[in-house]
Image (tube, rainbow, N blue to C red):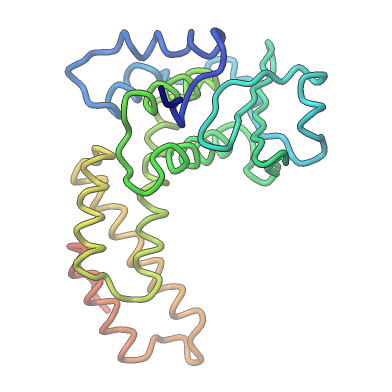
Length: 236
């Protein structure tokens, strides 16, 4: 029997799945994550952050890090006590440097978004084994509903940013974005806000790097076409 590419590595990790299982089955995956796994607020928030590359993987156990889950060739380790929660990721016998991901809210949203990309790879669909690991990690780091929402938005924003980079949204990219929105269970208002922001940000960046502070006519036309494909109204 083939071993799953995504799996929890301890009974300690498994206990964080139970809360998610008790959430309403009438909701979709993200609805359960936000309303069930994620708390309404972080009470007495632990310092939550990622380890840099100052240790070697073989030194993690001595520093009280325990293996939590495996995603392909990456193993995620957790060190948690009454006041702190630290995360380490090992790949190919080397530690990822997570020191620039920030702390608490900044770290949690970035970490969950990165884990979602790791777990789903390029199909963005999350199956039973994958959702088990994702729920357990979110529960362990005590992510709030708001942090889970923002992590989900960050996933979509990252994909949007990649799509608009060349100033053209192809039919295939347009269809892919629609499929991803469905997987992420994004509501229309959320999508509209993200689309509006990506177009406004792209326009601002284009102005910043233009010699006269204004995009050239071709760039303006490209941005307008992207806005139209994303259902955004522009006034420039």
